[in-house]
Image 1 (cartoon, one colour):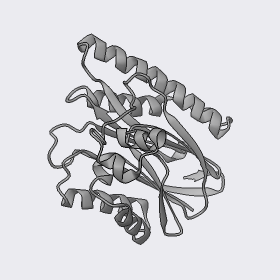
Image 2 (spheres, rainbow, N blue to C red):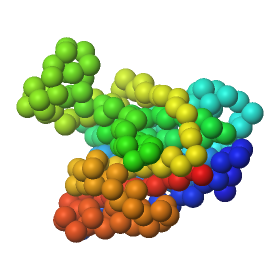
Image 3 (cartoon, rainbow, N blue to C red):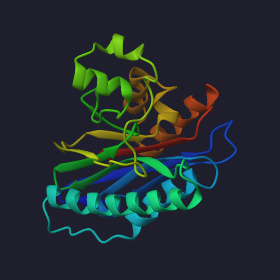
Image 4 (cartoon, one colour):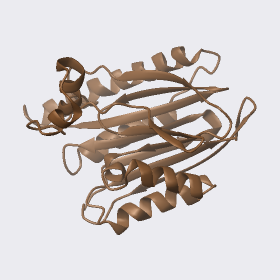
Length: 244
């Protein structure tokens, strides 16, 4: 597929893993629309999978105004996520006052030589450029809030109580997804993933696999297989996107 003069090769895998009985992850790859997303559901069986699939189904069904700027398209995506957030909150209230129906989400949209990212929670986006891997998203966790708001060091924050607890997700209030706009260069390779991958596969290993495996499918399969080889206690969603 092609966005302007860039060709796209992408592949996605959404795997239940080796321990969980239910796959609460969901992944979406629509290269012909320049749209990809990973969602990692929360709330347990029938809640987390509902939430993550609601996000990817809704993204798949929406019509993106391709004439808009990337910022305008991100506005459209955020409006959809805000609507879904309200639906999840309502669904949780109908179950009980303490029920959770929610999901992390990371969405990437590409237009010509520009990409937009929109995310909430700890599902991530990475870019590999000339052999260097860069994490493009910042996890919305207690640890990172301590770093950003109170100036804690990364080591201090990692030792904090509930350091990995999420501070934002769809299905939570308040909900204010973060965004960024970045450039795309020929040869760039991107990876979107749920934490079931990045908690078992290091950034260095991710960079090596994405460098060694030229095709998006081969890179995705190798990344997921490495997580499976290490026990895959969580669901694993991975999308690799190559631009050339």
